[in-house]
Image 1 (cartoon, rainbow, N blue to C red):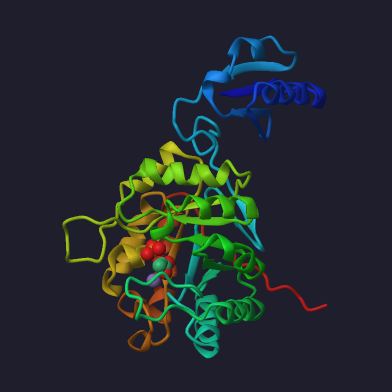
Image 2: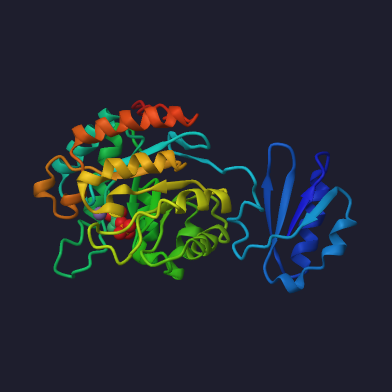
Amino acid sequence: MMIIMRTEATQSQIASVVARIEKQGLRAHISHGAERTAIGAIGDGRLINRDTYILLPGVDRVVSISRPYKLASREFCPEDSGFPVDGVHVRPGQVLLIAGPCAVESRSQMLEVAQAVHEAGAHALRGGAYKPRTSPYSFQGLGKEGLEILAEARELTGLPVITEVMAPEKVSLVAEYADVLQIGARNMQNYALLRAVGESHQPVLLKRGMSATIKDLLMAAEYILSHDNERVMLCERGIRTFETATRNTTDINAIPVLKSLTHLPVILDPSHSTGHWEFVSAVARAGIAAGADGLMVEVHPHPEEALSDGGQSLRPKRFAELVEEVKSIAEAMGRKVPPQPVPKLED
Ligand code: PEP
Ligand code: MN
């Protein structure tokens, strides 16, 4: 249930609504809109006595949220949400470009690709230090050393860093280095991890599980949001179907469907969606045309030598071409690719 306050509602009127919610054994979630404050009463709906709120001073109306995901729903927040990520903004109407290798393999590889994607126009860097590999014999990532290299790549380029965290006990370490915590497809329903990244209050990119429905994805997002972390982006990365010509099947439908159901930003990963570099740009373009708020693309300077996902990685030159294509499509859709973050000056 949402309690929408009048535009002229005072702080003390807001506080008494919050106190009433908490007295009923529920949690109050305040969102300050441009014009008015809305207060969500989160918890067991049976505890809510709707009528008592309508009569409180400063209350305009009381709205029930029909979806099982409350904080993630459009009913809760009709406007697209956005938030700053160290120098760049995830912002409605803008297209965020995240690029980098599947895994941080070495200092020289990461710094080379970081500079290349920066020159090509990326807004944020990706690179896995902890890799969820299907085989235990495959490269598992450089761990803490990988995080340190990512931090150096951020220093060099000024681009914020997105990297995966796989276990709750690693959240604080990864959060020390990363600007955005990535939850991988295989961990989308790891509730202990979702809770831990929620409590970290660090921006999160939540990838859709390969067999997860759109509702499952939104319920997973709800875990993070309900632990007081509003800075969540969703990522469509392809789902398992009977088709074997590509690694996964891009659920392009998910983009407009998610945009209608939730206010959260929606990013498309065309690399894991397709699994083949030849198809990445076409699907990336389709994602932007379908309304995605950004792309996360795997880029490697020498894909033939990559320790993971070389076959789906674009070379920097091809990525730079894709950036230009995306700019044209974004413009045709009335959106724009924002400027890159400006590197911080040394003191
Ligand atoms: C990745 O982004 O490198 C990754 C492992 O993706 P996913 O979790 O979508 O498979
Ligand atoms: Mn990968």
